[in-house]
Length: 267
Image (cartoon, rainbow, N blue to C red; front, side, top):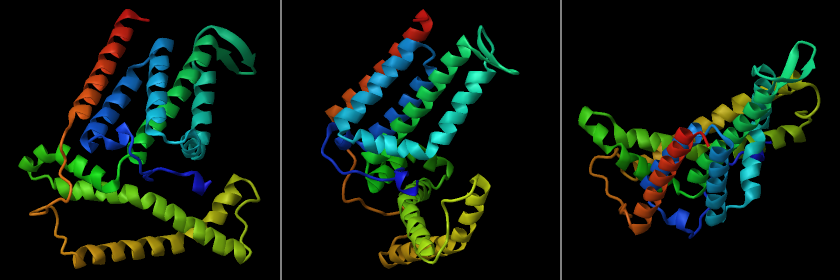
């Protein structure tokens, strides 16, 4: 299960999506989330499904990687579907004791599952196609106006990027600790959910120690390279918007207008 968590990983490539400016991808991700939450019909969800399918195809990210990233959230997706299925009022189809399934419940459950899946897939695409350093520079550039009110923009961007980058590292470390404890006779697979949760407790102490050690090593490495925050810092690669970025932003704005039209026309 731990190996299925792919959040924070970066898959290098030379596709159009990989080459987009990180600021463009951040803006498009926010637009994508807004438009996705505006969808409330088959047409709207069909349009968003088509958009995310095209993005996955263009980026050449394997569909297996996307689906593998969804596996750890399968319980949340199923629970959301069940709650919407049984607790949405409307025209009754089937009654099971005090629970009933309605036409509106089936529709709502389907839409909510699609929304969660597309939301996760869309946000994963940002980290899959953007290098951590580029993501940090993009966030810092977009939040640059906040410097006028004394917000530590660079430090916030760096912390968010490091936290995101540490997710795969900590998952790998957890997997190593589990393998070492299994070799010593620990059992993480048998028993019910509560017993499995209790079996995971011995992992916390070595995992915390490892996380603090890695954080200390990172801090020492940054100090050795004379890192002192964003003041006076130069970049090897300067961010520059190109024609493809403007076209992508126009596409995002067009998608927003189309979704507004779908909602207004109740299509």
